[in-house]
Image 1 (cartoon, rainbow, N blue to C red):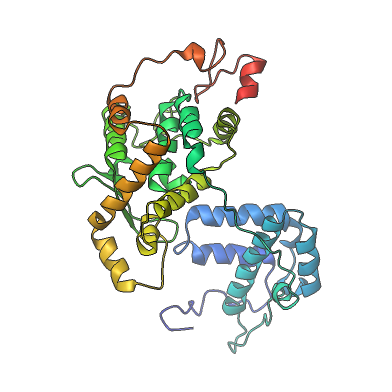
Image 2 (cartoon, rainbow, N blue to C red):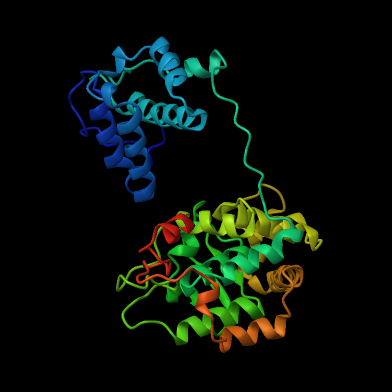
Amino acid sequence: MSAATALPANLDDDPKIPTLNRAWKKFMKYRAKHMKPATLASYATVLNAELADWMPKRLNEIKRRHVVDRHASITAPAQANLTMRILRTVYNFAIDHYRAPDDSAIITSNPVDALSSGRYWNKMQPRANHLKKHTLVAWWNAIDTLRDESVRDFARLVILTGLRKTEARLLVWANIDFSDKVLRIGETKNGEPLALPLSDFTYTLLVTRFERRPAGNPFVFWHDSEPGAAIGEWNPVLRKLSKEAGIDFTTHDLRRSFVNFANACNINETKIKQLVNHKSARDVTYTVYLQADPEMLREPVQAITDFVLQNAGRDKALAIERLRNPPERDESLLFPPARKRNWRGHYISTKEAKEQI
């Protein structure tokens, strides 16, 4: 370990092998500056759900066979792999951190290595689902049925920008550079900043939302009934939309759709990676200049927007005008009558309405 990254010598003078719980708490303390709070929170959730009975055990009591057996006992393959990757990370930290007075290791091996040497890791096929261009009419029509403008505009922005769900949901007005017509996020999932030009449609969408924003709420996609909050979890909306459009999709499917639409527009691989903020070991010089000048991505962004609107059966000029001046909506055609609606705009006072959510 280099001097720059070495842990303080007086961090912990107790040479005894720690429990998993103690090692985890120390891990959180020293990784808090380098990991997002949400990531640490998700690690804690997984450990509490899958390894709660191991937390009081000392690290030398957890054997390779225990890891193999526990991994096999977790029914969800992805969850099993995630659990053991987190455990492996905590062990690696503990091996380096907990030392004897002579600086020798008191934890000499990582039992999770058994999954690699024995080839026990679950083989996972990455999701490849995305919207096809022939489904865009049905998808856009279903989005138009949503009463909640925040949710409706959120879905539109994601499919036209490729933003990750959390990045889009938690956008604040400080992220929008209206003068340059650029969306800027300083810290993304991979740690790299994102500067994404706005197309004519997404720019108008954000301008109209800014003009109608509620006082005191910094979020682009504000919560209708919780002042100062962003929109919440929209899985119930997704289920309704899937039923309405006959298309099974997730928010990340919209991001994958954006990539596929970019490919359909003959946008080169390097620019596609820049659009979705993927790191690449290749084309380093070109990547740096793209990050410095988002204008180089404006034409591709506009091409994707035009492609989506055209295949969704929308006249772009009319679609932009409808953003500025939304037409009166005949709500009786969208949902069955009911006396009360939840914050998403869905009726909740009848059994039939609940079944639609």
